[in-house]
Length: 488
Image (cartoon, rainbow, N blue to C red; front, side, top):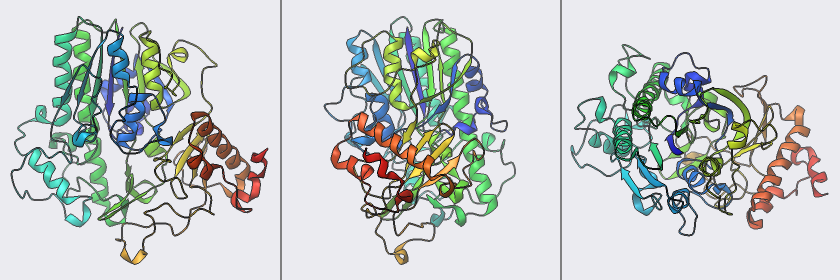
């Protein structure tokens, strides 16, 4: 068997037709879903982009031990394990952050190709000063937008878009290597901003718009945008989702044309989503000149798509079990009958795809690194059953370093807490959009979710110097004092 793993950065689950969106056009992923195991409760783990790739490459929950950083030299990675087992391994990626500046996430692959030009990639130097598509005060990083405009200045048609070039490179590689046992990892940064889909795609969702194009919106409160501007950023994002779908479709057609469908598993997923005004936010974190801080991670960001089509099973199924990115490495190794290293923490999803009913985990945990900044204020999202808890830490802890800012020094789109926020609890069965915090009337449920997430971190082997901040119960009023029983 072969495996193709496709990762699309910032792809919101709720923008795919196979997950119930009737507005955004994703016919190719919809068709894949009809033949695949569709995971209804797939959630991000380590957040955001680079920590997610570390989860995928190592099968570990890196949030307990690492942050946004290069691939550790001593990490056992998926590509090396498969290469040692006789598979030819290839990475094709236009996501710059894992490849630039010595991050070295291509380590272990027999071959790798970096499609240049996305976002911060210092690829082209002309034109020197391209005009911005919107007022600079509405853009997260005006100079990044200018670099991006330089990188796309010679673009002629849709085939020159980054995801198109990436997927075409994947098709070319498949043609050259179809007769071998292989693992192909394809990583496209789209639909991550700056959004730059051809105008024909954007017109599908907001025809006739004539205002500013906020292609890379500020990360923060969304109230700096007019309603037409906010609607247009949703349209530009939807256009990129459709563009990515179209070019993934080219890869799927190539798999069929080369006769690979009968011996190749195809996996599609993402790392996280993006707020387009939901909960009053744009982006996925607070960001400003000279500063950065976490946002609470609700479903729009942490609930991700995961489709796995097996070559011996063309009957689409909806699976309710929790699944997270560290599960991909052991799943792929299981499908290829390759022994998993002892370092892997994830759980293979292969048994449940083949009918096992008791092979599941009880909860999902998603967070920015808890090792790099272990004190209060880092929002961890815990999902168990129909409940979602956003937990920030004990109110007795100080805010994490970097959150101590004089409010007078912050721009208007940034609103940071002055103390560790209280937990938030949401009933997903009755409030899937997480509009009503029911923590006060359901503290016993919050206590259970907190205890279960601490137990998971203990099982994963989180260092005590970090874990103690999650376990500490120093405040009698913390969660109503109900944590005292956890000491037993």
